[in-house]
Length: 77
Image (tube, rainbow, N blue to C red; front, side, top):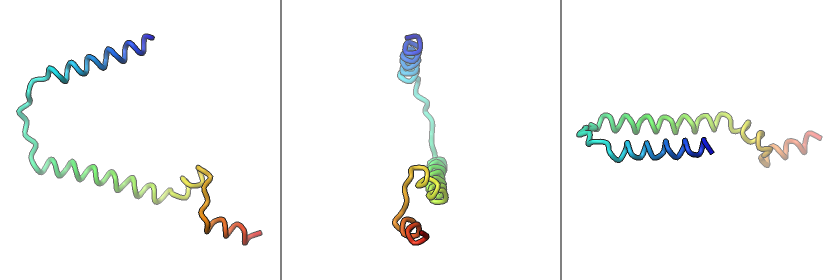
């Protein structure tokens, strides 16, 4: 009960702060925008590379075997 009330109070305080904020009159130059895009793309590529490197471990965690691995298991016995 207390946690739910605290979360709702925090949410309303955050919304009030965002709604009543004065205009910033800020400028975001193209260099900053391209840097942000570059960071996002590098993060996506890093996540894709990590997935590729650890794909066998991910599959074994969920108990999935490919058709090639099943054929190898059958020929060994």
